[in-house]
Image 1 (tube, rainbow, N blue to C red):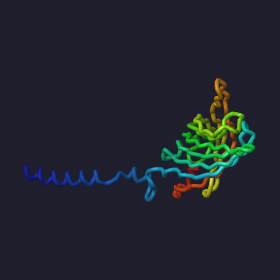
Image 2: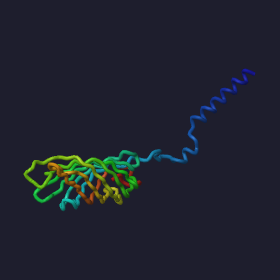
Image 3: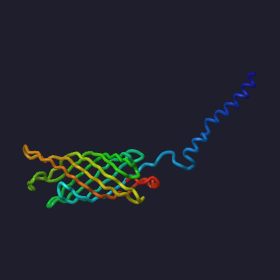
Image 4: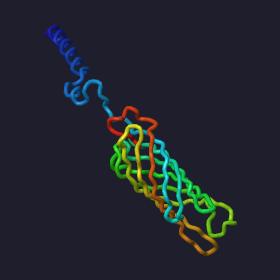
Amino acid sequence: MTTTFSRHSGKWLTVALLTLGTPLASEGQVTGPGEPTAAPWASITVGAKAGYDNNANAELLGAQLRLPLLRRGSLELMPSADVTFVTGLREYQYSVEALYNLGGPRGGVYFGGGLAFRNTIYGRDFNRPRETRKGYSGVVGTKFNTDPRYGVQIEFRWVFLSDQVGDDVSPIDPQVVTLGINIPLTGRGNRRGGLGG
């Protein structure tokens, strides 16, 4: 009896190992041969923009980098730099914002906020030295990714700063609308699902 059990146990052990080592047929049907098991990362994009600062009544030019923090691109980090061409003065602004994209890599509405640093002459006396002050920003925009080579965005940004001269504190709230173009730097294999820009 022991010999019969040993003979049969070897067969059962071989069958069990083969069963556990073979992928289920249902798993092969879910992904299919040659298909990726996980979605590709959204693209890192670099962009340029132009627009108008309603508070300063002046045009501006800027650049930005959009860095996906999640695989599907729903959360991004966007450092940017802008130059506002006020009459007789150039104002420089540097921002770092976190954005939430409702449409992910395909585009759509996004919103967010972060920190802004603005370098200018504060106050009405242009003889004062330039200063860099920290403020906060809010962003709402939408992006369109209709072409694999680039994406287009329209963006509204509010920056909240204050100009303090003595006891007088005057708010400086740049209100900016821009039109921009983003070019993907990565994610070449993600063309079917859209760009990350």
